[in-house]
Image 1 (cartoon, rainbow, N blue to C red):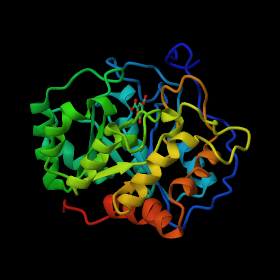
Image 2: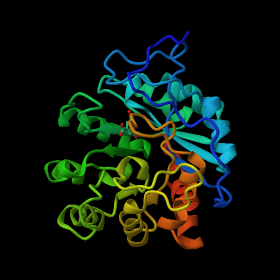
Image 3: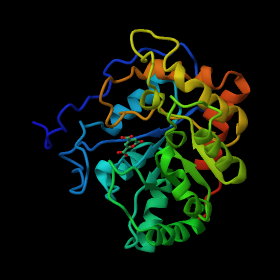
Image 4: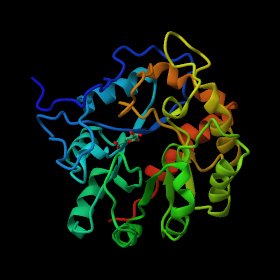
Length: 307
Ligand SMILES: O=C(O)c1cc(C(=O)O)oc(=O)c1
């Protein structure tokens, strides 16, 4: 029996993903994915807002190989709070083929930061999505950012598009590279050249240290179609948003599966078909190589700042 009871209605990840038709370039990185537990080995955090199914490192590595990726960037999921043990365990088992983004509190010691670095952590995640986390004061986040900056780490931020104006000053004062999860969650029912998405484009244009993950069409899409049953044109309503970011900022974009897709309520995508989404948003081989190989390799496997 599982150690934890899943949140009612929880959808498990898609068990037998198709083989993608799109072949990712050699050295491709899935730059946004998670591990969940397993709960009996790595308990979920008491402060979590959801209880997921298990999604182990071995299952993640099997997916990586099946989809044709070379490496992973594993992002600490909110269900594990600031307990990074499952993440570190996965990084240590990955034989140099995974890097991590952790969640830390201001109480973390320099020694603990060094251990995370040695395990392969290269960033911290600040989450502003209210359904996922309780509020953390900005002075605490800024203190963490200034402590991780000398390590050469970056800050990953997750927020909803409507909250960008209020968070702007904080984000633009961060002293590191800043990576936005899932394009800042645009409302794709609004125009791609409307004021809301223009603000996000301006955020990236005016701040050359800001990168974006062009991930999660399955979360952002309203009209689909879903990445199921061999669909080769999934989530068409998200394409103009992601493509605009890829074409405007080709050297500052990352892509990830978001496996095992926490909190999806209406369907669970076939991850093979999610890979087939990539050429719609990065239509040339040059853009694909930057998105999948050059950018993540530079950010996560570049020069290390800790001896
Ligand atoms: O939108 C979400 O529910 C979500 C949750 C988490 C997490 O719980 O860490 O991570 C994500 O990338 C997305």
